[in-house]
Image 1 (cartoon, rainbow, N blue to C red):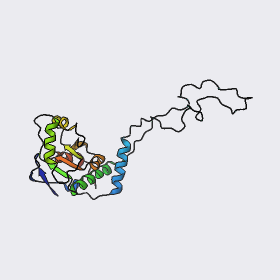
Image 2 (cartoon, rainbow, N blue to C red):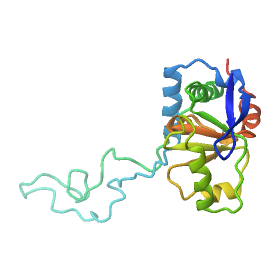
Image 3 (cartoon, rainbow, N blue to C red):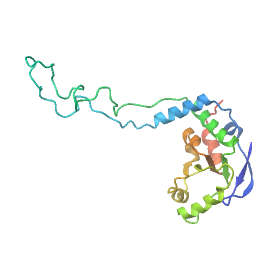
Image 4 (cartoon, rainbow, N blue to C red):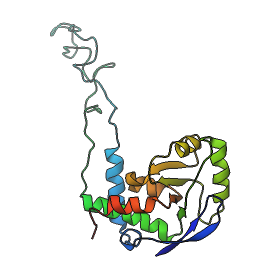
Length: 216
């Protein structure tokens, strides 16, 4: 499967052959949905926390004597049935949200998301992006030039072969584009992006990183 290659001025400068094992994988909606669910679940921090009756302050003294008042028995004002009392079955910070997925299934789901982008024309290969200075205004000029490419979209994902400090600093103030290393791709980010703007040198990195555990 061939796809056009553009320069940072948005001009077509040739073609590149995409690996069929990565970019021509048949779509399985069930596997993609499962991979997205597990990825999002594993990214949960689990910081929500409520206090039990043992952790809420106060309530050490019995509010009234056991018998003779005509009221129901009560041993503490911090019982869950009292106002300001502890919470029953509330969220706890030590809850583990981690789910497991087979490594080959995870890789195959990533290949499916990349195949979908490539086959829909939203996989845009740029030969290279060079910034004279790591400034946002410099990157905006390049972005304006390549944004005219078909299927560029409003929220592209820039895929770099290795960390380029100038590119990172030039693009980090822009909400419309995010950057990621080719060795750190994941299903959620790929599906969420309108298009993938991939530097040409990222293609061999993708092959080397993800074809280790070849999905059948």
